[in-house]
Image 1 (cartoon, helix red, strand yellow):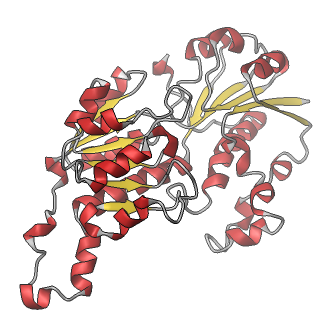
Image 2: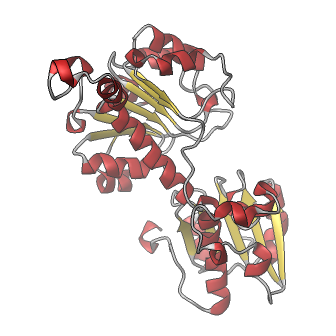
Length: 356
């Protein structure tokens, strides 16, 4: 018997191998538009482990993990933190995995003491969110909605080629990116900022000195992040302590021309305070994929701001995560490593032992 213990606060570890639960019995046909040749690349959990005697335990709390870890062969976690003393009870463990490259939930000292490998598999889901964030930023800085309107009304016929100065097109290298949270979505964004020659700042509940040089980013205090950033992107998980973390006070610290970006969770921000700041032109604009209430009510005032280009607001329907096979690819990163272990094959996405 192979015992696998999962502890996942969201569900991503299993989503990609239980597609019928989320998309219905014809789920394979719904994946065809993404990749007509790839149906064979979307196996179910049962198909993956056919021929193996597997016990899968899905935990909802640390107490559940503690109750099952003593005889577990594999521990898979996502967006949770396992204390050293709990992991050290897993004397039979062969592999500990974190879904996502921000593996702060794995106690590496305990992993080393057990003499087992740890892996941190990248979340394609999160990479697509980082890309969506960057699209919102470029859309704003290069004034793409205004360009479209200008071309649609054939403004160049009377005004000549080139955009009018009133569009206030920006240059990324002149701007400072501020990341509120420095997890797996924020880190690719810091890389993108490096590519464009931007200065980048971050605040997180935990500081990451080793990553600061790697990503060319500076740690700063929470209030300073809001006051210094030209583009402020919120990338925090939603916990009781982060609910409403961005309120009227924080928005009031922002520069008059600053862009506010959020693709994390709508309840991280005071949406009424943000709407008021945008309506009164106290900040430069917003790119929003998430909202306090979802779906966004049809009469929410954010719609009117989005439709009036003078407010520089772009909204999308909580779609930042979308892309071909995101759930499937995320889950398979975890489950293929379990199979690699069972077959004696090299692991993918091993945590660098230097991190210990």
